[in-house]
Length: 440
Image (cartoon, rainbow, N blue to C red; front, side, top):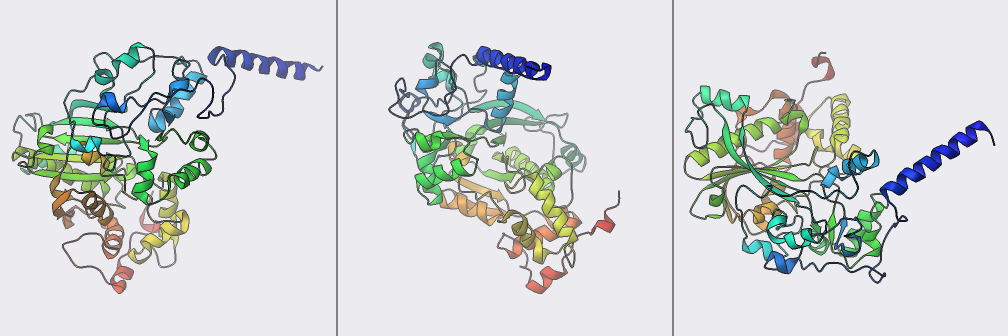
């Protein structure tokens, strides 16, 4: 045996020893419904109470493995980081969170929609109530994790400071502090998919949905195929955050006015101020309008989804930017969607069918002012049974010059506007900056 071979064998033996310390049992790639030791905790989606519904359990820890009633892992897109923390020894694989003092700061619900399996299929309506309703499971060592958290905070934004200086907003000490901070209630939610409901929402079979989720993630979740009895899946995708301006109780009160925006993440604009789109201006305008609504005796809500680049992702988004600027004739509104389709195959993967779930969780029955131009969002909300009284588009003076390509293309595609719908010839004349005008 050479020294190199001996060294490799020692390294593998060391890895095996380390792995045994983390995971003392053999590797279990998948389980089956009739397998010995597999007795899932009953889970009845759409039950009227948390106790009748049961906890959502996806943990593969020893005390929970055979009792799982869900596929996947908690934490959404962050579950991979947790696995990495375990692998490098920063986190014990059997760590039990201490949920004392983590209870919600505000009470939301329950509402009738929580027990309607057609209204909520992409989140756990009882996901914030783990300590309240499932403490007996926790005491038995069952690894039940919250998927929703509710807290309070102050929001400090330079744009809000400017609006206060300009007299567009006032410091009332209730919604806006004397120092210009916005008082908000925040809700964070991770995705929890009830597969039969998700399939029905998209008009496909549950079997087809499971197969696509399995195949197009490289076989990442084999139990989507081997465990048809498990109806809940925790997908490794981003969740959402709700920002509430004013009294959260007013959201479900039909006597109070509600202003709302449903916003899909745009890191380049929302955080770094890119002017190729209207995302940040729309977001800031919505925050201002929600604040004014709260100060007028109503309530404002901004729902922020992690769906970067129309759920195509930021890499695809930037590839499309390059193609738009380099195409023959330059970046025109006429070819705005075409470039996305050429790269991604579709122009939008948000689909919005699951989006209204969070609104039903909040108890929304009517939106008085909906700040959005999106026809997809509007139709999804209205078709789910929620009334929209008035639609509000972004004011012209809030649009960055280079974003006109996006806006005009969307209006021509059916997005809401109070102005004129551009003709095909007009779309050809709407152009964005070329690379020569973007100096570095």
